[in-house]
Structure formats: C-alpha cells, structure tokens
Image (cartoon, rainbow, N blue to C red):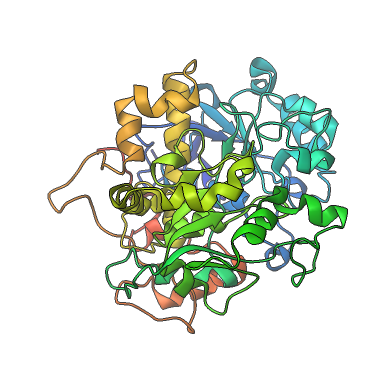
Length: 474
C-alpha cells in the first residue's frame, strides 16, 4: 500500500495511505501476527505518556517495553474495530500518585467509543508501582474495575501484614482480569543474570548450598537489624513477615546460606538448590532471578501470586509453602526426593524463558525468545480471547496449545531445531563479551535502564521493524 509519506503517532509508526486510511509502518510490508492478539494503541497527548527524563525513571519502564514489542511483534492494528484489546500508553508509576491517570482515562473514555462499549474491558495498562494497583487512588481503581492491569505485584486477597495498602479490602490483583508480569532484569544490580549456568557456555557450579537468601531482613532502611529486633511497625510488615521468619529459623542451619547480604549473588544462586522468592516492601524479584539461575524458587507469601500465576503454575518448577509452615521449611524441601528436585531444577530452564524479557533486552541462555515475558503475555491474552469463560488456573490443563507454550515447545519447529537464537543481552564493558553478544554499537540503548535496540533485541539483524521474527508459524 502506497504511503503519502511521513510518520506520526505515539511510536511514530503510523502514516496515511493513498485512500486516507491509517497504516502501520506503511511501505515496509508490515503484517499482523497470525496468532494474534490484535491490539489497538490509543493516541493520547504527550503529557500523559512521554517520559520527561528516562534517566530519572527508577526502574525499566514497562510501558515502553510493551509499546515497543506490540509493534515489532506484529500485534499492532490501526483499525480499532478489529482489535481484540486496547492498549493505553500511560504509566501508573511515575505519575506521582497517579494525578494524571484520571485525566488520561477520561480522555480515552470521552474521545473514543470503545471504553464505554466494554466498560473498560479488553483495555490494558501497566501499573509499575511497588504494590501495583493498590498504589492508585480509590477513584481510579473503581473507574478501572474492568481494565487488565499488567503489574509486578500479585496480591489477590487481603494480607494482614499489608493492611495499609487496601482500599476497603479491594485486592490489588484480580485473577483472570490482571496479569502479574516479571520485572525487567536490566538495571545495574541485575546484570549478573547473563552469567546464568543455564547457558552452556557459562561456568557450572556444584550446588552445595541447600537453600539461599541474601538481602534486607527487617527492611525500613535498616539492613543490620535482624529478628527478633524487627519491632518497628514498618519492619513488622516488611516482606509480609516472610524474610524475618526464614532468617529467624534458618540463618544458622548447616547447608543453608541465609544472610543479610552477599558479595556475589551470581555465585550463591548458582551454588544453591533452593532459593527464597520473597517480597520486600512490595513486589520482589528474587524468585525470578532464582529461576534464571536454575535455583528452585521457594514462594512462601500467602495471598500473593508470583509472575504469570495462576496461568503458569510455579509448583511445577518451584515450591509453595504456607507462611504458617515456614518453621517446617527445612523438613518440607529436604524431604523432596532427588528425582523431584532434579525434575524441578530441569524445569527452571523453561520457566526462566517466560520470566525474562529477552525479545526486548537480549537472551541470557541461548534462547530464541519465543517464550519470553512479552510473548507469555500475548499467550495469556490469546487464551482470554479463545476461552473467555475458562478460569486462568485451568488454561494449562484444558488447552494443548497453551500447555505446549508453557512447556516451551516451539509452535512451528524449523529444520534447524527451533529457530535462530537471540543475541545475548549486552550489559556493558565490565562484564564478559561473548561471540553472540548483541552488537556493542547498541550499548547506548542499554545503559541507565533504557530498553535495548529499536524494536527490541529480536530485531537485531532485521532490515526493519516489519521484518522482526514472528512466532506465528509463517
């Protein structure tokens, strides 16, 4: 389709064709992903979505990562009438108590008919805060009761340690509506993930530690405080009480490394069989990093879903323990048979692919990117379109295509195995550079929490964004 020239829009991807209709990446042969879903991206005034200084953002911006891959993954449609879902390119993290969020939502509702037709349903928006939607004003939460929030925090029911975050006991995350997504491992203290022993080129360590956790125990800025001296109310509610209980019962146990800090997280994760998946003041990343290191994550926070739960059962590759059973934690995990431990540990290699944004940032274990965090979100949305009445915890058991995806079975294997491998995430000159490292000239895109090369690491080597690989069988 011939374009009239020039591009516009939130991500400069739109233009008018000769018929006066809007096209996506006109003149490049852009095509929609055959598997879907089709997503319409709202055009909103820049004051609602433009990052004024990306260097001041305190974590990788989920909003921009999604916008980037919706386009390069072939999910962006310029026709809202054919859309399965609608993406609102705003953020609930750095809008300072979401003071711009209500005007943004009102703009969307008043400018287009789609919000009112669905009551806000089939609309998607990220909530990047420490406790997800529980950071939002009550007025916004009530207005967005049908919105699918993509958030790091999965608290789906009332938890007595976090009474301060609940509005009239409204859960922070609604299963089947919201999606708990993994954080983006690219900031300075997460760069060691490329040293994962899941990659065959990296050093393999003997897993001599039974259990590992390192980090603040009492929280509230006091890294030296330990139980039973976590008495200040902020210290009591920190981590939902999980870190305190684990430290209290097991910091002196032989074979268990439970410490307030470590000089080498990579060594300790790679040398341990089980690792604690613990929250902090809000969402936690340790269970995700544990899986990336082939360490079996142990989740012990009540009422809290980890990334991609309940759609992806962490019990298949991890261990779930009730908080009241933390004193019995050693008995529970040391009672697993060697075969059970080996099976769970083997499954971390697949789980790690779901928990990493490799198509945005680059690989960490020689993966293709087909099963990465973004594509896992798309797989969940496809299930909602396909089986809207099916509870999310039943997706795996009742749908073969979704089950194959969660088990990392390629949708359309090619003669070379399962497709070309992503380049490895480039994280700077202080860490090793491998033969498959994403081009160093792209380093400027990675530093200080930027998002990698245009279109994502999946587009490295492609002639344009329309030519980025699509895992849709074509």
